[in-house]
Length: 350
Image 1 (cartoon, one colour):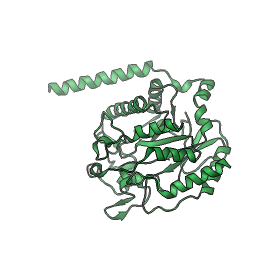
Image 2 (cartoon, helix red, strand yellow; image 1 turned 180 degrees about the vertical axis):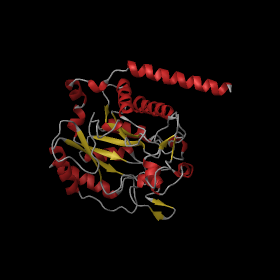
Image 3 (tube, rainbow, N blue to C red; image 1 turned 30 degrees about the vertical axis):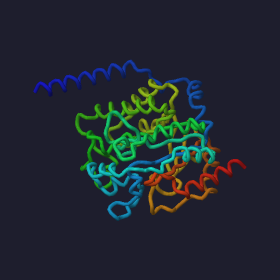
Image 4 (cartoon, rainbow, N blue to C red; image 1 turned 45 degrees about the vertical axis):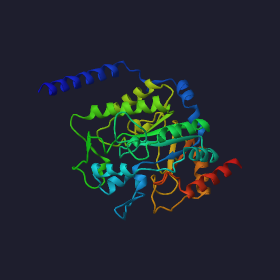
């Protein structure tokens, strides 16, 4: 009983401290137009970036127990309805020894890309860095290497801006569980937050994001999964301000809150792009084939001319193109992706 009482007192203290901090926190969403323009200058000038989807799902290649799973391969845990416990066993085999950050970033450079964003933690909850706040990370695999550090170092070497993707939902974290009130894929996409555990998870998120900023000096946090029902605008704006307090010059995408209403620092249309110029910064993210994560059966590559035309159209309307590649189970970007990227780079030089 004493231990339970102490935990309750500690939880009240944490909530009180969070409230005090929130009330004292500067509202960075109200920065001047001049300050915003200056902070966003490198992003506005960049025009073209590389998105990397890589995680435990990469070693499955879109297949589960001998069966090809439809839809995006990085969602395989949801589409195959794999329990967190069974899915976590994939860490024992995760060993992408051919992952070469120097090759990946130098390829982005040759392709004419100016920045790079990597999935540090997708919806599966697996972290590509050694986080102090979970054992479900790359340090607890046979591979052990710090992919995020390798990519960050290579980006600095080739003068490429470095960004990190982070999912708001987490299919592995104990605060969340499949939403049995929903059917099919919605049990996972709208994963349920357990009663009384939201604040604990938000603290977990903030601690991990702080690691990405302090350990890797990330220049951008690229959020996803803002659609989940328990995430709202107030939580998003609080997280936005927390991150800007840690690093005022950092850039954050609009999915930190609700993307349909929040446009700072930039909008993020996915697999489509805007038809006209708008009064806010934006970036369209596209796959180079059909899936974001590596999928063995997906050979539907966009050719270099199609990518080039898309880039020109997006840039002409004031947006950036963030083009995705998905390294395979060994950590290698498929040759078809590399060939397309390099060909687009040649076209840009002309």
